[in-house]
Length: 45
Length: 168
Image 1 (cartoon, rainbow over the protein chains, first blue to last red):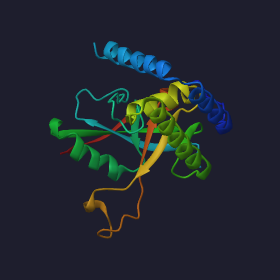
Image 2: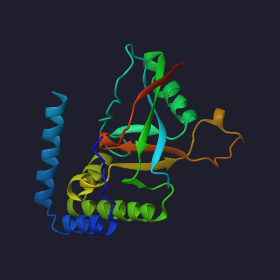
Image 3: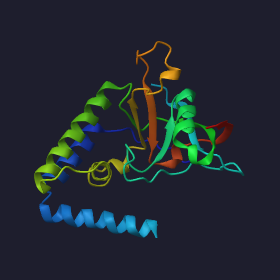
């Protein structure tokens, strides 16, 4: 089995989330929602 | 925290027995799409008896899980605080942007994909309270945690063995 040895870096994860949220606009979020819907539709087909 | 845990995966009865766990991909799954395991056998059995009634019987499988890189919101205080803060922040921002309450699916997917959790968090351990009065040792006293692990990276599932079948 491939051993995953990266320890969780919560600070880095928090910064990553902050960055995503701070740069989010209504349009970018709607486009992402659409992407999820399309992916779900593909998976269920 | 132990790096390796022995956990229980419940599915509807199936012959031949499963060779690997089944991915839960329901949109309303609490922790998003993942392989769901119970920490305690009693909860795995109760889940089989209640959620797998359509099958008439259920199967409980066991696995050793490498828990080194899971987000442990049950026993690790730092992880728990991080988890709460991240969800609150995501929900607040998504609401502010769309003026709509986000769904469970959206919140989970956002944290995973846009928050970058999918790159390093292999699973999330989460607890609620046992709702089954039959397995409570003291009536009405919910002192025991009902603990689940949602696994996003199946490489941490070290083995997968059929344990027993039960009647619903």
